[in-house]
Image (cartoon, rainbow, N blue to C red; front, side, top):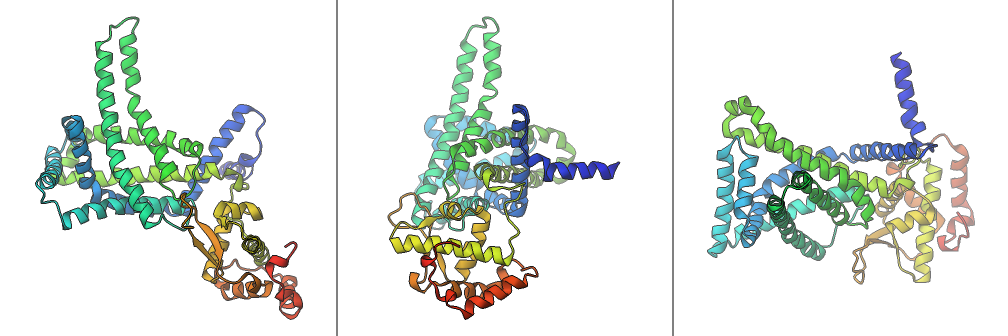
Length: 435
């Protein structure tokens, strides 16, 4: 019985899930399940669980500077006391932890106002914040198969914008919640209007978190992300993150025995555990947005094709032929998505090909100085006329350790040997009519 159950389950996830459904509800269910399964595969394949651990450390390292900036902006809006009450509520069972944390923040602000917050202090503040944003971007880029990060100048401008807009977003959203709650309280309770509006206001934090997560997925990766794909991931992730925050605050009441043993130290492992789970959810959402935007690249749940050596060589020659023709014509170099579309190959396979060609010294990635969108484009490192079929195959042979293992294909091996002996090997790639 168990054997039949697991066989049916395996058949569903490997075949039936990827076939077209007959009804509209069936298509919707399969679309959701496909994205969940594929996002899980991408999350595990890119080993995001280890990235989550690194991001948890970065978050703990940056929590005091972030709170200092948030409190500095909140004081300008008159919401400092409200934020302090929220922090004390988060550490309700460990008030000494809240006192210590708020003491660090006050120490930061007092030194900044007194003009003493210079030198090493400002460097530590900037390093912690830039390190957190850089680690988040690197994790998102890894999921999106993007090998290049933002340029330093772009990092400075973009990250600085995040440092100041994020606290303003948090403060304004908190102020909006207070204003709407006070406004609803002043309304007369006609036909349950008062109680209904109060119930709806409880969902406002979830809506704001959905907006924040959607903007995070659209902005942070160094690639063009469709807002629809960012929203597809932002909706469930925003709801789960807000629910985790609620659970973290209210679950501490049930950990009195744990607090009795470890005292104030109990807040640290609980905070680290909550941060780890939080980054799991956020990184999984990034994988979900990537899958939604590239769902057409997956074939029966697979995006990394098991290519033979002959197929790998054919697609590599096709890619280099497209790049050579573009360089010969003097047109704009290909971006990563354009290359994948030009040879009709899934993007993860193209990423493997580009990595091999980069190691072989044939291709290099760069951002044109005239491109304001920071789009990474791929250029030849050799002269177009010197890039022949034989030279490319010889370069691939030298990088053979990184290529897929060739099956027993003696016919293809004889064909490769004939390429080096005949005149075909000396043909430049841009002169080939078809590959």
